[in-house]
Image 1 (tube, rainbow, N blue to C red):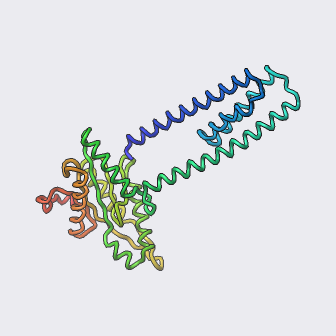
Image 2: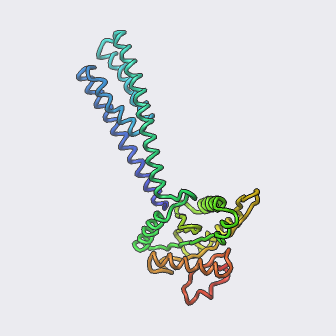
Image 3: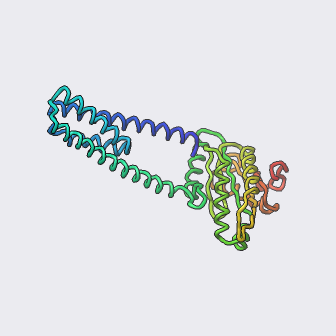
Length: 300
């Protein structure tokens, strides 16, 4: 997600919390006034509404807040509006306790439902093995970012990374070791990209990173990723540590591509060039006619 999206989401979350708080406070005030005017006969049914609102909006905390309000309301009501007999006090205490227990249970159920829905939403966006975004999420993000560049200007750099000799690694050490390697690579990539960037498992052993910035920014990040992957080790059979390398290709938009599809093709072409030149290197796409004349500093 972009930093702007993070800020926007945080601001929207605060506004939603504020609106819910105002709605809960308003319902408590309205019910308190109604009970004061009509008497305690409808007290429990009327206070059930803000209790449900509190549990749904703020989970256990909301239920606790409503119950505290209810207890204070009782003290004030029976101090100024009615005589509090021992039987009334006993019933009030019992009813408040039951309200608290019911509200806490409802709040807990609502929280679990929220967490379940959040996990389900996350599972549709991310790759389960690496924890990075999946292909579909990345494609949507790429389209949105290209649209923003077309509208507001700026530059994008796309990094395509591919593990070197991954098929041989799987054949030699087994698919479980291969999965462990992919998990470690996903964690490495995720730890080095900024919140403003997006990293995804593009497919198989191929990964994609989209950043705001020109080819020099993309190259700097790609080099950091390449060096970091060199230090990643996986323990295979008999506890033997094995390390791998990664090749990378970089393309930019709009300087190096006309649209998002061409941006992916250009980054893939640069990745292929890194493979052709011996792997474990980064190549910037400069166009077919100039591919053989890449600056040495940008094609390590």
